[in-house]
Image (cartoon, rainbow, N blue to C red; front, side):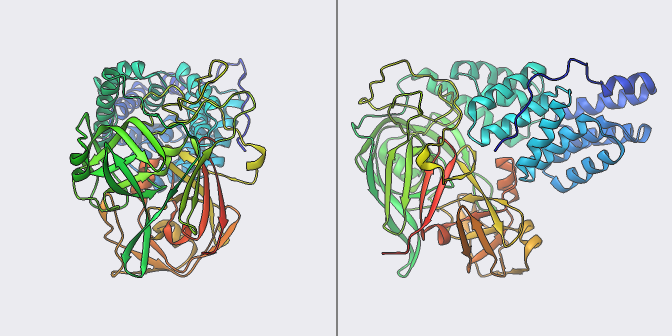
Length: 545
């Protein structure tokens, strides 16, 4: 459960470390600190480190220097060095800013409750830190507490609207039209974002403009049903080995078989199917995942119609990868597109069942849609709904603001997970270790353990003959470990085929540490029920019939 935050901090003004340094130290120290901050804001990290080192030479207890260096190392994905730096800082100063930075390190390490506690302590101690409020908003958002997250984010933005991290998250919380305006302003200035991040933001802006210029593109269900069952077709690596499951999909009347993937988001098809279906580019995009070859180039277009079983949707976005797919016959479909439903994946019986989510006590059923436009300015950020069923006739105006999760009585036994967009992370124990975060990924042909996590709990052996592939190509270095026991949800699984790879690039993209992936070899023995709206998952073991 999240830690409550006192939203009325002490009226006593907090100390200003920068001002203290300026008044007590020579001009050179003040100038070095100003230079460090300026270099950081512009992404000149090596120069910023040099300036912060100069500050520490003059004042070895400078909280600003330790805080600034910690954030730089996190930006550079040097997590161990960030932790060492902030730990050293706390040995010489107990300043609130350093505790806020420690929370940021904890969050990146996957220690989310510990991170939240640091930020809550700072705020309740009377120091109204913008980045502490921002940090708490990230935790609440990951816990599907969207209304609380928005309140924390707005407070952070009120306290410091110039902080680039706060600014970007705040822009993402706005309406589509507002996002376009603010992204244009943001991208017109110099920032500390790396080239890949800026490219992603530019692509996202192009996509938002395409949506704005073509209002008909609001993905919506036109079928008059809210419950359906879809057959899962086997995908084999050879005549005797099952790799995963495919779903038959029709795009603009052209049939394809897409890998069903809880580790992916939206629709991703290869060029050939897109060409047959007449899907054309509206904005460029890059697609990443497991593999060492970097992101695959592609674009986003729109399908006039998408049919899945008895369900039909109109005007939905589709990602197109500019190479032959390596993730299914014709591409993949992320389970998050069904986030308006209770997603029941019955692997032993090879069925996908989509059912209505429980209505909150204060609302009527507003219908369901297909979520293919996550993060595109959707007005109901709490559910991901981008359309409603024409059969839905709400008797009262529907609240469209962010909503906190609702756990229905019949779902009390479900496991709370952390949701980062389409990514679901479940706390998992490796043997008797403290819980670590594992990605739920039916599209992964192996169950995997991150290399750094594996070295903490067991022995690691090189395995040159194992091949792991994904959207980003093949993994070059693969290892195996000595049969650890995995515990997640209410289950305990002895994994006999656990391999180890470097997952640092995925952790960097998500923003918190991925210690492993629960892949198809484990999940195919289970029935998995996912409530994306409320961030809860139920795992039950069902032997093959």
